[in-house]
Length: 274
Image (cartoon, rainbow, N blue to C red):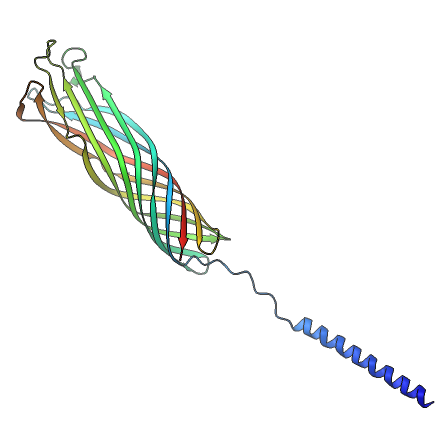
């Protein structure tokens, strides 16, 4: 009888202990805190990078020449296209807030390689062709050497990507050249030229706007695809009218004018975020 009682008591103790352990384990599982949500990548900080891409330009080129007989009609070359490439470096700072919005400021400098040349022999005065057929020749050239800008940026973080718009001030380095050639009489005794110093280097200021998407590949590596549209004013240059045989006509200058130049670029960039 005594052994049976001890056996029953031992079984009850083990059963109670087992149920207690199961209850404690269940409570531990139920009281465990939920897993934290995945962290949103932070875009705040300085960055530097390099970029490269393509560029194309669109402009209206007009030219006007003045001589003693009176001004010649402006020559309109129409809409002139130029294609080329760009490549350079960039640097900026981003600040993330609210929590998925990002604002920042960025500066960049890009070397460029694009040019356009137009030539015509259709010179008129009052709508009437001037001189003998083929007597006059006009050539104008415009070459883009570099682009630079300082822009603000605002964007929205979507996963690991930043979709943004950008805009600000821009500058371009341009080379201009113009050549007007008057073959004169058939024997060439009156042949003369009026050409600009070759070339004229100028810096034009303007504006730029665009947008793009940037991907945070790692905590420090950023990849970008970007489109920018630049708008610049034109330029004017003067050149003396000089005879091939020697000497220039005093006070007689030709005037070349290049109207507004619009440049578009598509660039890919690789940046390092500190």
